[in-house]
Image (cartoon, rainbow over all chains, first blue to last red; front, side):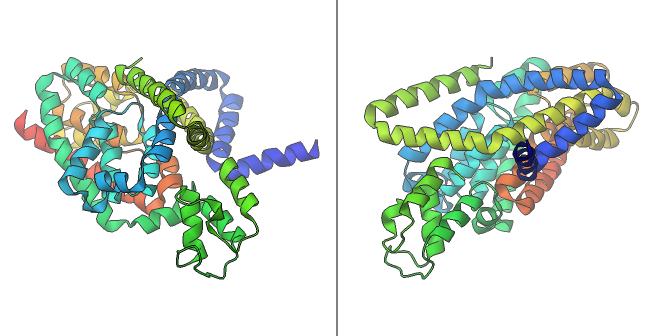
Length: 239
Length: 160
């Protein structure tokens, strides 16, 4: 009983957003049960929408992760891709499905695989404002000229937003501050010997840990580590 | 279901079959990646969806009508942009709403601001964005998007 309580406490410690939401809902349900139930009904419809899209998005990204090489992604969305990369980013965002939160993990994967920060922002924005199904609904309700004019203004605008964000924010900042993969890198780093012997071909154990976390290197790349099995376990479970 | 959603599901199934035919071990690794991604975000997304549900119950999208009232175009543009910033509603709800507001006399410029901020600037999804990309990235992207939404709608006002 006590350990279950501890598990729940730990869960909410690791999921602050969930903790906040549950707290808000408890307050609402106590003061106005009807309001709470109506809210849950709306939530359920959003939840179904999410279930339609997210699993497919993640499967596609999982396949990209194992089949598409870092070089390919860098060639399409990397720093050197130039104008071609901008258009590829607008295009991939335009043919996406689902709300913007589905775009975050996709963009994060592309970033890790070598995409430039600016192009990530372009994909995110295109995903949000100019995706194809949205333009169709927009034409239906607001008329063709409204849709076209908004499109013509929006595409250059999101490319500018991407370029400016790319100038202000470095990739290193994102990798350091992301709570998604950062933890995994930390944990692998702890398991490596830490004396930066360089036998694996990288300058530091930290760098090796990043490569292993990205899936670019197998855990056995480190010849002086005795924790290969643990590292593999970490990669399997993801955290 | 939206046509792109169907397309996406078909794409995922095709890729998966192709992948398994080519290399089973690699495919399982890819599915593990997918599973971990899902595990990493599922709780956050469900929480955010619940907050959106609550928000939309408290402040139904139609409320924007009463807020807009007889304000000037500039004021209406900023109010609409602000309203779009804090809410997250699907496009198939937003466009009918915007269209009905236009027939009731709202200006096209303010509706463009509403739609652009609604989709591109995410106050309510910011916690998830921060988890992936950090605070500074989220702040910069959202502020720039808000500014762009205002500029886009003002530019549209000159043409339409």
